[in-house]
Structures are given as C-alpha cells and as structure tokens.
Image (cartoon, rainbow, N blue to C red; front, side, top):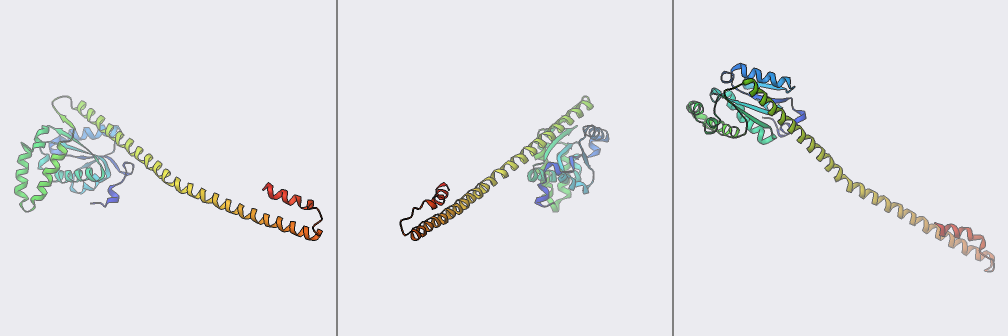
Length: 253
C-alpha cells in the first residue's frame, strides 16, 4: 500500500475519475460496456479493474463504483479490491458508489442468498486465513449500506443515464469542495503571515524614531556649544543673533 503522502493526493492530482469494481460474468459485458461508454461521452475517465494487479489504480481514482451482481461475491479479486476501496474511503476520503445489478440490496447487506453461499465456500477455502474472509464481509457490509442505484426490470439505457448523472454530480461536488479547501488554506496562510509583517513594520518605526532622536540630540549639543563659543569670543557682551539660524534649524526639526 502507498505511503501517507501519496494517499493524500488532491482530486486534481489523481489519474482517474472512476475506478470500476465489477465481475463481468455477473453484470454481462453489455452493461459494463455501455456504462463505460456513457461515462466516456461525459469525458469521465474510467479505469476498469479486471485483474489483481489493478488494485493500485483504486488509489488513483476520485470515485470507486462497485457493481454488485450475482457472481460478485464469488470473485476473490472483486472482494480484495472492495477491501482496498473501503481503506481508501477511510484514509483519503474517496467517494464510494454502489450499484446493485440484478441483486437485492438487502442480500448484500445481510449477506444472504448468493452472498451467503459464496462466503460459505470462502470460509471453507480460507480456513488458514479466515481473517481475510472477515475483512471481505466487513467491507461488503460497509459499501452495501451506502446509498446507490438498484437496477430493476426496465429500460437499461435510462438506468445507465441516471447512474452517469449521479456520478457526474458527485465528481462536481468533490471538485468544488477541493477548490473551497484550497482557497481557505491560501487565505489562512495569508492571515498567518500578517502578524509577522506588522511586527517588522513596528520594529522599523522604532529604528527610525531612535535614529531621529539621536540626530536631534547631536544638533542640540552643537547649538549649545556654538552659543558658548560665541559668548567667549564676544566677552559676554556681543549679541548672539549670528547663531539664530542654528537655533531656528534646531527648533524646526
């Protein structure tokens, strides 16, 4: 699994909009093909997971779409991907969207019917690694309780259209949230630097004030010394009108 830095990538940095988790034998290539084609028409980039090596792509996607079908619980690959999907939801806030294709939502939630049969076989096959089966059950329950779409008898094209609209809406929502967070972070950073700038300005004012005070003190000494010198030269009787300009400069400053 990737490190924390990679998992925290922003939505704009991810390679795919949708990771499609499905078992083709249960959904029929027709349904998944039409779903992917409809998403492609909306310029939604999809990655179809169809082998064990594709799990890494889950972390590169903004949304994971899980298509539950009658053959889904029998697929070890699908269940392993499902565990990773739930992990990504918890660690990086990935959006998870279930589709119940030709199965009742309560069957996967309660793990009844074909789900119960499949897990009975898994528990028999994985006696030495029963924890893996428990993780499958737990992940299945988590995703099955998420609001999604349930396909029933009717127009499949219309059903796919509704699914695509929902996915598109979720993608738009996640993009808006990401932009808002980025703007908020930028404003926060700007605000946090203002006290430092203010402190620097105050220090500069103090430096200027101190420098001005030093200059005034020097001028004051020069004026006094000039006045005393003038008195000595004149013997105390001469007018000090000739140093008036100096006094004027001093008091003007």
